[in-house]
Length: 173
Image (cartoon, rainbow, N blue to C red):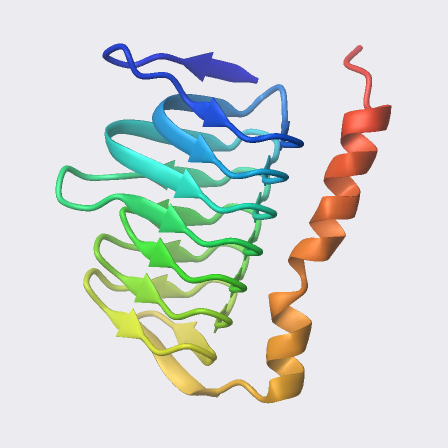
């Protein structure tokens, strides 16, 4: 992992986190306990803050960034799929953000929502809790069922197991 101080501010990493060697974390980045950032992920908190909640996973090849006007706030128990771009937005607790999605400046995803793979969430758009969000531009297709909320909001648990396996068993060659 590469951590960089920017303008005298260094990232803060909570207890029990896994950060892959190829991840880059710059400036005002705050990682909650047991969060995990996977390979080739960039979290660039240069002009504003990035907050990643506890138990949240940011999977391989993700880009996390901010703008002057908006922080990036990712709740707890969130799964962010491979190659997602989260740019100066808010993602509520218990969400699953599908692979290749893009969520833009000022957008807000309500807790326990599912953003389908490949979706593009426009700037400033807000979605209620428990939404199934899909498309480009992304729209609410329907509310998730209680069973779906239970399934998707607990996806993070598979990554808690994975990060513990990597913390205890991975050896850089």
